[in-house]
Amino acid sequence: MTFIKKLSSTFIILVAVLGLTACSEKEAETTGSKVDEMVKDAGTKAKEMKESAGNTLESAGEKASEMASDAGDAVEDAGEKVSEMASDAGDKLSEIKTDAGNAVEDACEKAKKLMKTEDTDC
Image (cartoon, rainbow, N blue to C red; front, side, top):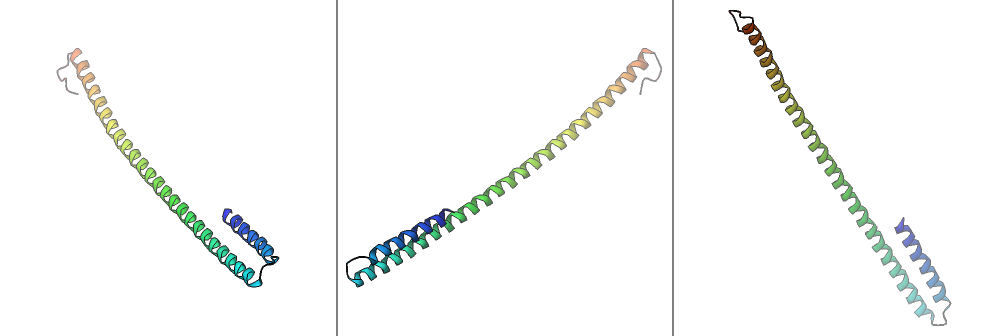
């Protein structure tokens, strides 16, 4: 939007200058060369503004691409963390299961010992 406003302003100024120069009391050749110079300058400015706008758009595109890549990396890291946590939880559950089994076996052996049975293995 800014590019269009600048371009419009440049052409409005150009038209105003051309109108004022055409009304000048100087020779027609001087006025013509000034008009040619102004048209050339306006064209150069318009080209510079277009290149500047293109560079800005390109830079914005690169930044957006970089942000998308960073977001992808963050999602990948989060996925790895979740996998690691699930693996740790599975290991912990296995340990709890083993500990519970050992506790039941110890309680069984203790009960058999208190009852004075010959076979204390459970």
